[in-house]
Image 1 (cartoon, rainbow, N blue to C red):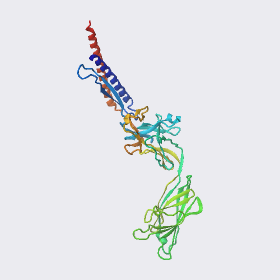
Image 2: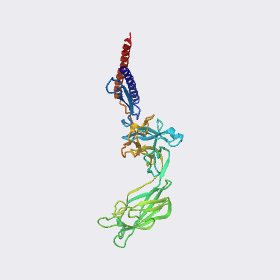
Image 3: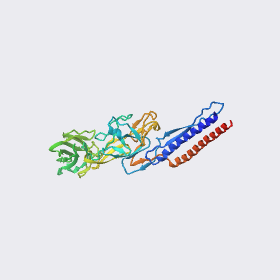
Image 4: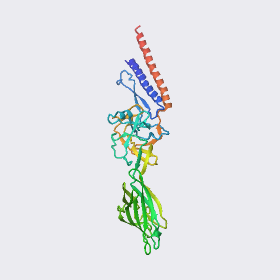
Amino acid sequence: MTISSSLNAGVSGLAANATRLAAISDNITNSSTFGYKRVETDFHSMVISPEGGTYSAGGVRSTTQRLIDERGALLSTSNPTDLAVRGRGMLPVAQISDILSGNGEAQMNLSTTGSFRTDEDGYLKSEAGQVLLGWPALADGTIPTYPRDTSDGLEPVRINVNEFSGEPTTRIDLGVNLPAVQTEEGAEGKTSELSVEYYDNLGTAENLTIEFTPTVPAAGSSNEWTMTITDSASPGVTIGEYTLEFDDGRSSGGTLQSVTTVTGGAYDPATGAMIVDVAGGPVELDIGLFGAADGLTQLSDTFAPVSISKDGFPVGNMTSVEVDANGMVNALFDTGITRTIYQVPLVDMPNPNGMVALDEQTYRPSPESGPYFLWDAGDGPTGDIASFAREESTTDVAGELTSMIETQRAYSSNAKVIQTVDEMLQETTNIKR
């Protein structure tokens, strides 16, 4: 009966607008919740009347969708491990309860922001109990190759703030000028000495003593020096001796022309370096390529260490951590050294809005969201990671209040339809009287 379908349509209108009001109230309630993604309600008409004949009202049904792909504004904070994704992609996290239970691998959830701080066990955990996940780095700070289509390689980011760490020296680059006048006829043949500090395998500081002795000819200029290397960790032992000859031509005067190995590792003309064995192991000593002006040179009358650089650092105490835009979790030591200890990837998928919404502004991939992939932050379609930042709610309070007024009016109108149908049915009943 047509009048009965009007009643059903009015009831469906009440239900649909009640659903919309619930979504609006949820959005307004979470207008100050960091990382909250607003819910949108859509109405869809239902047509059940056949072609021709008496019309029957089908009513309306409502569907809701959480707009996870919408991004809120970023708010600056003072915590270096407050993180927010700037652009596409999501941070991998896990519940601390899953990790502490020890029942296998923790389930990966996703979030676009979080305020992470170290807990009593050193985990980077948010106030909601979400632990940041990342790929652990090797001892030298490099990130191995991990699978990108699964979360199997991810581990909870765990920081030991009072950890001691050091790194041995494996390479030293020498940029030194030797005085050309010392290889001329009648020169005093003064030996020039250079001490270079390095760090051994236990983080202890040792020194390489490098002596440069000129060859003084009977006539003219020899342009030749003998380089002798000794190690403070092995007193009295010469670990390398080399004969250096410098060019005196117009185009490349003062640069290395030849290196003859007397003892120690051979000079490699392709790299400009030789390997010397200190007490803790081999160290690559770079003195420059033939014809190059950035290594050892022989110019003028001054002995000058122009530039000396080396890797490695002494034992230091970790003081804090920071996350850079590419997701590298860097440990900062009181010696001024920074070392990468984890990499946090960004997870992306074809349909972010198809994910399952969980508590605490976290989400879980589902068949509707499509297969996910773990990208380096800033690579592929993903954005980067902003530290010292939180993402605000995507709720527009003014828009939601306007929608609330519209919903209230629509609800009242549907209630009026039901009231009118009731009066019409009452009139129908009164016909019998």
